[in-house]
Amino acid sequence: MNEEQHDALRSLLGAWSLGACPPCESAELERHLRGCAECTEEAARLRDAAGWLSLDEPLDQPGSLRQQVLDWCLARRPAELPVPAWGMPYTAETAKLDALLRDLGPEEWQEVAELPWHGGAELLRPAEVLGRLTAVDGFLALALGLPDPVPAAAPSASAPAPVVERRVPPQEAAAPAPRVPRVPPQGGPSTAVTARTARLLADQAGLPPQSVRARWRQQTHDLVRGAALAPQGSTPVDLGFAVLPLRDAFVDRALECFVHGEDVARAVAYPYDPPAPQHLRQMVELVVRLLPRALTGLRAARPQPAGAPGTAGATAVREPRRLRLVVDGPAAGEWLVPLDGEQAGPPGGEPVASMVLDGLELCQLAAAHRDPDRLPVGEHGDRAAVREVLHALPLLSRPRAL
Image (cartoon, rainbow, N blue to C red; front, side, top):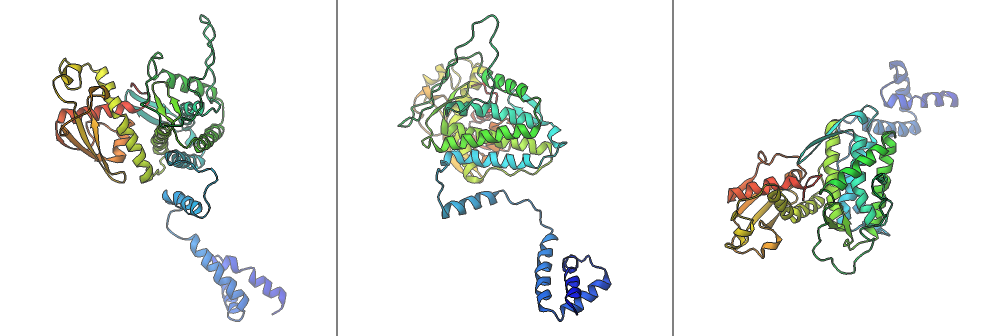
């Protein structure tokens, strides 16, 4: 066999390894392989590679793979500018949503996602969901001294132009911040959130979806870097209806990113993994810390009769109450939740009730994505207290009424 014939047979190895050669050529090539060690070795490699192409397993990698790879890399070479633990849920959830958006085709960008909240539901396309996330994330950008992604509101013709002034200076406190104060009334607790979202959606209305995604993606990267430069996480973030320390605001944004990422995934029939257990635990802890505010908001919306639990008349004759909250699942833990507000004094005695539910379901309920009357919950003791907590949790969804 001359060199030209050898090269001709060798050129058939790729097709042969895939089973795409005609029978006559396959037979001739296999006779050649019995006497040519070089081609036999290459044929074995190609057949092995072809085997991977026919696997029945899905090509999508498990959601935990990214974190495993990052952990392995950081163990070998620590990050030059490490992201604090409270910034990791936001980093992971924005990366997960970005991976979903990367795979969307033109028709999927036109699908409509339903975003429930405690007052109803919004119907938004994926690019509009990104606009909503970008607008609220912009509060973090302002606190970190980054540009605001939302265009300024047009000045009213009947009022003088407002003086542009940063309400929260971009600074890092040297010591842990005291109890976070509320923001004075600004025309309704959710006015800033809804107004900013409306302005940004109008501004990006003519942009292609991938341009909207690029804007949001760049802002998430800038925010993560900003978190790395403020590792204490005590810088106050003005969210329009309340002020949270930076560390809590980042976890809050991670939870909303997950919830709305799942909304988009449901609209386009795409699988979407829950947060990693260590990240879900941070979200649960934040919900528990905010729960007393939600109870206060619920009672303000539903005035209680004098002397009812949680009112001023009741606290004068009984000790402040608390509820034992037991969370199951990957974010398992137990908390004692004050039921009568922070001003009622330290709670005493045994909890008046106990409530058991899954951590992910707790977060979904806080996002108003579950019905409090249909959620499977283990309960013991004062059933009215349990029901009140379940109906207060959806008030933590946006727009909030706290």
